[in-house]
Amino acid sequence: MARRNGRQRAYEIERRRKMKTYESEPQLGSDDESDLSREDSCLPMDAKDCPAYLDVVEAQIQQLKNMHYQIEITVESPIFNSSNAEHPIAPIAQQKRGDRMLHIAAAAKRTAFVSNLVEHLEERELELTNIYGETAFYVAARSEVVEIANVMYAKNRQLPRIENKSGMTPLEMAIFLRNRKMVEYLYRITPFEDLNAKKYMEILAATIHIDMYDIALEILNAVDKRKHTSTAEVGTFTSTAEVGAKVGSVLQILARKPLSQNHGIQGQIWERLVSIIATIPYIPYFKRLYSSLQMRRQARQLVKKLWGIILTLPISNILEIIRKTEIFHAAAKIGNVEFLTLLSHSYPDLIWNFDSERNSIFHIAVTNRQEEVFSLIYHRGVRKDAIALLEDNKGNNILHLAGKKAPRSRLNIVSGPALQMQRELQWFKAVEKIVGPPYLQTKNNRCQSPRELFTLEHKKLREDGEKWMKKTATSCMVVATLIATVVFAAAFTVPGGYKQEKGAPIFLKDEWFSVFVTSDAVAMFTSTASIMTFLSLFTAQYREDDFLFSLPAKLLVGLVTLFASIVCMVITFSATFFLVYKEEKHGTLPKVVAALGLLPITIYAMLNLKLWIALIHSTFFASRFMFRPRHNRLF
Image (tube, rainbow, N blue to C red; front, side, top):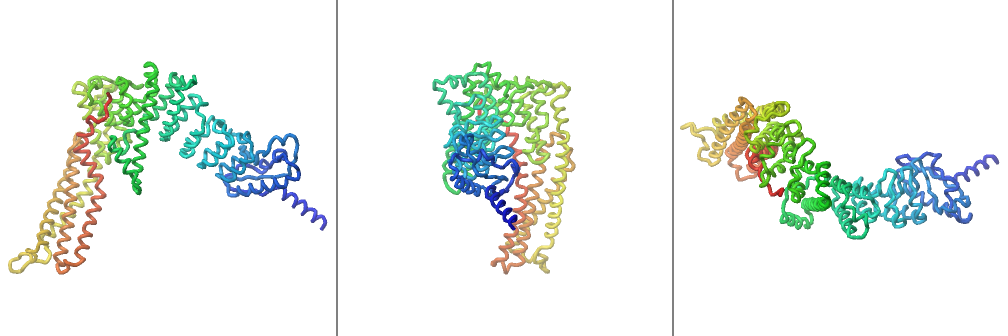
């Protein structure tokens, strides 16, 4: 018994000196590495105060129960010596990655615990890092809790300057994670005057990359304010070729941002109207629209400011930056017309800058099927004959580029292989008008004329278009045949029957009988016309030029007549119902039947609306309005 009581007392003493393990995900440490060292866990206080310190630490540890880490913490009786007297509160719970208690609490977003713990720490203890060089402030920057970062910054204002081993500041980490609230806070407290040009441009480029244009503008405005000071470094910030190249790389990011494709709204009047409507509550669409317009306006301001920095350089440096970054060609590739016009107003000749394959912005626009950029060729001052003379490294002129198949992303803008083939032909015809007859038979390095290259590149697309047309015609013709069969039989089996004396229909003088006869006849004729139209698609030769107008027009006529026959067939059925139940025609039953008759018509219209719009726009309006001068001007 004495031996057992001794073991129990020893166990009780050991239990008081060690605390339990609190588990959550992920496991960061191991048992042997999470024990507190005897020298690093004591306060410079009297030995009689150590139990009070134990109570404080135990209370703090209790607040970390549900954290996303597994921590084993060992609290031992303080031992005082001269070495640990220098650390008021030593780092707690170091693990494999070297995280301290403050790192863990910041990652777990425990604001109250962090505030309580920071009060007992010295400034330099907040600068302690883990094995990756990350301070607790850096870890807080990864979270969305600005209050935690603010508590640490109030204690030590050097924390925003400290980078990790990869050279990233807390602000860069918040930008990388697209945490807008944290970015807005860290931007205000980060000392940009201490950053070199490279780091400054990296932060600026990162904010632009994630569409935080307002913060990027504030960064540029801050530099403009410091530029008027006597600091030599700021004074030379916008005058060196090295910094000009970095500004060019930032402009390259903006060149890939579609500044001119925000809901199609152009002009200050429309933007102001949208801004007024956006102030009305319960209209979220206009608020999103106004936010998009604001981003577009801020992006324009960024382009002007950054381009103004480049314009301070010698013309040779400007040409070198444009050649290396290819900002004009990057903008032309995605159809960023507004970016091109903003830059070309200063130096109009820059639009004739060529890329590594000797392509101008108009060649890039044709290759990537950007009609808005290509439409700039119609403006006064653009030499169309010079464009026709230009050839790339493979001997292709601009018409050869139109003969190549469009990128998949641009080709899929139009639905259906047949309409895609039609759009490709429209592009080829539009460029053909610019080039003129002398260059139609020009051969490239492979001895291919533009038309031969077009035929070779679009062979599979033409075959797919033919299959799509015939498959669509087959399905629609089956429906049209069924409708024609039904309405033909209905014409000789009129509702109510015939009079035996003269053979005239019994309801001949009824107004609903007139509706029945008229709708039945129209349904018969339109369904027959639909059958004939779809039948013509099977006998067509499907040449390349047939896809330009003939085949899409036939398909459109067939779909319209089929829809008309469906509508008239439903009207015929409704008229028959009213004739048979004429004693109920003032009740609710006929109205219900008429309402149900609208159901198939509505379903058919909704399911085929996009196809109708695409056919009408592509056949009758695209070639007329797609390639014409726009409001954007190069000069």
